[in-house]
Image (cartoon, rainbow, N blue to C red; front, side, top):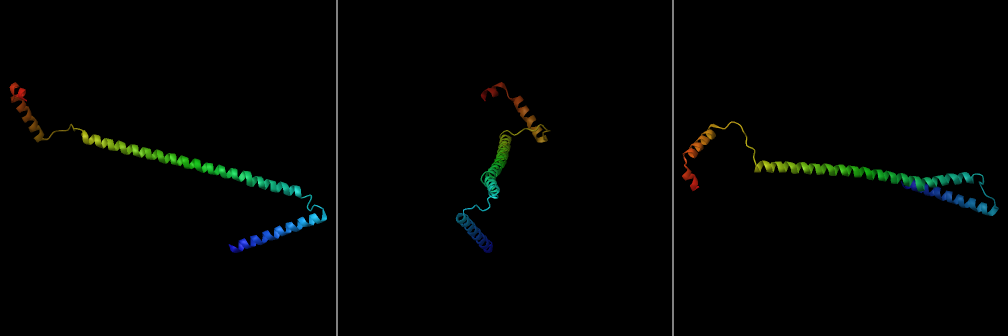
Amino acid sequence: MVQFFTISLAISVVAIVALFVLKQVELSTGSVIFRSVRPQINRFFKTGLVLVERVLPGLAIGGFMHVLKSIRAWLTKVIAHAALKVETTLQNTLHAIREKLHPQHHRGEASAFLKEVGEYKKQIEAETTEEDRSLY
């Protein structure tokens, strides 16, 4: 890694020295070096500059907005599923509470013991008179 940066620094130093030498030659002779190539180089660097200043940031912002929209959609789904889970849990809890407070009576066949108790109760009610009922 150190070698890469050292070589990059050396190339940069050589390139800047070369530019200074070319500029000094232009100033001392009064002629423009690479006069015919300069408009093409200008267009090339202008295109590169537009790419770096406008296109790449636009693409980055577009990608960032896409990621934000994806996160928002995912978060919306997560919240919706959580709300649905909470609602289901609350409904199950409510049904359990209702079941405990008001148990459903099964209409199946009664046992022999319950039938006997029921007959005995009817017999006692039949034997009580109006006077006995008025006392209670």
